[in-house]
Length: 355
Image (cartoon, rainbow, N blue to C red; front, side, top):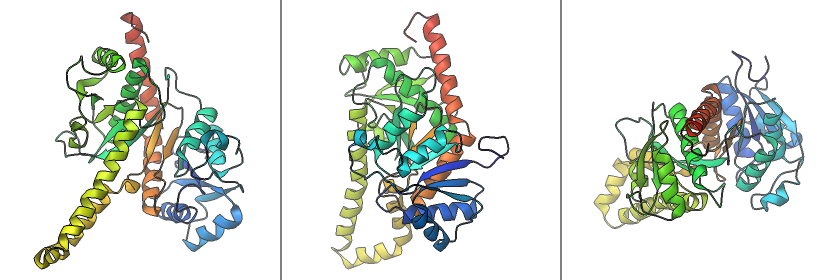
C-alpha cells in the first residue's frame, strides 16, 4: 500500500538530526513506535549513523526506513540561511511529505527553519492567509473537555498580523482542537488586556468584531492573561509575538513551581517524609509541567501535517509527537480546517465581509 491509501498504516517522516538529543532520542522513539504501533516511519539522516542506533534500540526494520542524507540544520542557525540546506535531514523529511511519500512530518529541530522549509514545499490550504504555529499548554480541568491541555496560537510564526489572520487562526485552532481533543465545539477566546470588546489596539478591536460575527466559531470574547492557564477557553488566539511571550512564560512557571517546592521540602524533616510518600504523584506533576512531553506544536494551515516537537524532547516526547501526527492524519485535521475555512469564506461573501 502507498501512503494515504485507505486502510494503509500512517506514514510519518522524521527529522533524524533535529533536536538537542538527536539522533539518539529520535532513533529510540522510532524504534519504540515500530514495535508498539502500525505507524511506518521514514527517518532522514546519515544512514551510517542512524541504522546502528535503530538496531541498538531494537527497531522493527520492516516499519522504519532511513532516508540517507549527510547534512543537518544547526539548532540556532538563521532560518533563512537554513533554507539553502536542501539536502539536510530537515529538508529531506519535509520533502518526503510534500512529494507524497509520507503523510506527516515531525521535527524537534530549528523552529524557524522548519517553518520556512514547510512553507516553501507544502502548499497552504485554500483560504489560508497565513499558517500559524499552535502550542498546547496545561490548563485547569474543564467539565466539557477531557483533554488536560488547551491550545494557543499563533506562538511565533507571524510577527505581524491583520484582523482577518486572527479569524483564520481561530478557525484552524477550533478545527484542530475538535479533532484532537474530541470537543464538539471548542470555545475560542481572543487574548487581550481586558474582557470588554473595546479593549486593546485597533488590531484586537477589529479582530473581536470579526470573530463575534463568525457563526462557525464558539467565540466567547476577550480573555486576559490570567485566564490562559485557568482553562477559561479551549483555544486562545493572539498575534505571534504575544503568543510566543505567553508560551515561554507558561513554560517557565512549571519550572518555578517545581523548584520552589523542592526548596521547601528541605526545610523540615516531616515535609521530606511527605515528599517521599507523595513521590509518585510528584513525578506525574513534574511530567505535566514538562513541555518536552506534550507531543509537539502543529503548524496549521498547510495541506499536510507538520509537527514541531520541543528542542529538548527525549524519546518518550518524540513518541507522543509521532502519535499525535498520525492521529491528526487519521482524523483528517487538514480536511476539517479546509471545511471550516470554506464555510467562513462563504458566510463572509454572503454577508459582504472580507472572505
